[in-house]
Length: 321
Image 1 (cartoon, rainbow, N blue to C red):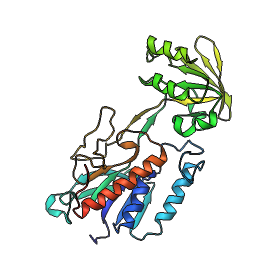
Image 2: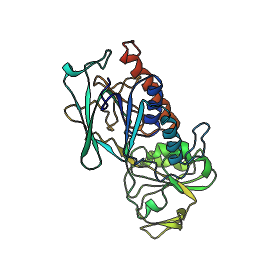
Image 3: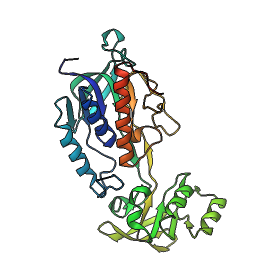
Image 4: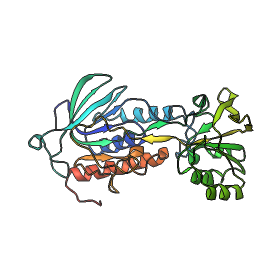
């Protein structure tokens, strides 16, 4: 495929999964285009953790390093601050190559608000991540990413032993409380008035020393992103030193035209264990795929694995489903 607007692989999304996949695809002599809107879900996070050799690095610095590494490969192109506005499938008679995706050439329009370019690709990797909706709490954004976080595995170590909060309205709130209690003996769960922790769960949490408060929050108290207390509608004030929120996430597939890959009940893309969706030539990795939000290193590993499968599929080597 030698046309300047035709690629072996289109990678949609420039997070750890997409960039890792692009690196490994490029090293396999694939011509790769990465399209990244440059609006990462972790933009508010000052430092990321758990990534071997990069523990504590700011997420934007991790992306900068990755893009610099990709720039060394002439067969990898990265376009930032644009997005895929529409992704469709061309007719099978126009497809070229061999393997699983041979009859599945894709067409994509790219731009910011309106199309400025059109490309074709033999296969596509969806590494689009998730859109995040935080709990409805006044001034929450002022603390998010500084002293309130969403990932215990990523950030609980830095807050171990402190007075912590868990804020959310989802059905898995009690499970998350059990997890966070591993890092502290002083945890308070705030359900914002939602009936999301039942009586049995509340009793179990109480036996662990975890309090459940059901009144809505009127204010988060603190300075320069460092939270100090939470004020409730009943007038009570709970002193805390940090904590976690339980966002709700959704996968944005609105740009797909003429086809719809299978998703689970939470909207995450369903794939086989190798990253293939049920659409020939369409793959997924990272937060957008089951099981959903992941640590950066896990997403990067998923991208590398899917890249290997895509190369094998392109040359007709049977691999595990």
